[in-house]
Amino acid sequence: MSTASATPTRAPARRLIAVIVLVPALAALALWAFAWPAARTAPRDLPLGVAGPAAATVPVEQQLAAHEGAFEVHRYADEAAARDAIEDRTVYGAVVVTDRGPELLTASAASPVVAQFLQQAVAGQASAIGTPMKTVDVVAASPKDPRGAALTASVLPLALAGIAAGAVVTLLGLRGVRAVTALVGAAALVGVAAAGIADSWLGVITGDWWAEAATFGLSTLAVSAAVAGLAALVGTAGTGIAAGVVMLFGNPFSGASSAPQMLPEPVGTIGQWLPPGAGTTLLRSVSYFDGAAATVPALTLGWWAALSLGAVLLGSALKSRARSGEPVPKRELAPVG
Image (cartoon, rainbow, N blue to C red; front, side, top):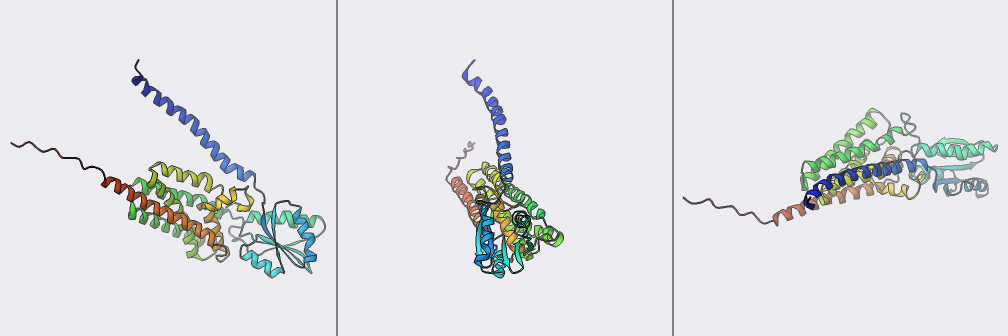
């Protein structure tokens, strides 16, 4: 039997082996990406304030130091300064020493998980040694979503909407300005629809409506443009690569269900560089903190969107140039007579 006839037989076998190997590998990668951060959730240099006279706060700082590596302590002169720091999203909470006794300030809007942890680790421990500690929620989450479940649940649909929009633009063959227009238009409508559902209907977020819509839209555009942009540069495989990065790393590394500082490093940091993490942080800022600490996540999403839309235009220009450089096929002359 010739080598040429054996080659077609090997091709299906190789594809079969590739499927058998790749599918479990992808499943293992997905399980690791989602399960590992969740299983290792714990505070790591979590910003926490301590306020009051220096002499009075020493025992508090010693108590916090017992949680080695858990807290990054910020010192403030009084309760007012500590409250300002919480509202500016500099810290997640603060322990204030007053004449009435120690008091724990939290912000469930920043992260219900962190607020609960602080109540257990700080207030609970103080009560256990005979020092009752009052807890005050300075910036509370919406009473219709006290655990932040709805906000957390919005991460995956927005990512899927972005992936779908980028894939559809690619499959329809839209290029250049038309592709950019389709991506921006779809993201804008997603933003309006998402704000209408989350704010107007469910009431789970309570900030400026248009700022929330812009956040939803920009988060979607960052993903959809990345999918379409990479596809425009490297072909159809770019759609899968961009979608894989968003789904396997962007979502589980976002810290939406807890906080970036509650994830193992460098997962928490990486997550804030990707659209789902930056979008979640920005949404919390505009929904509950009047836009405090919104600059960095907004710039992150803006850069993703701008660079990816630029990739869409560049890919279209390169393909047009390649087509214009192809030799024009000669037409056969019809015989005369």
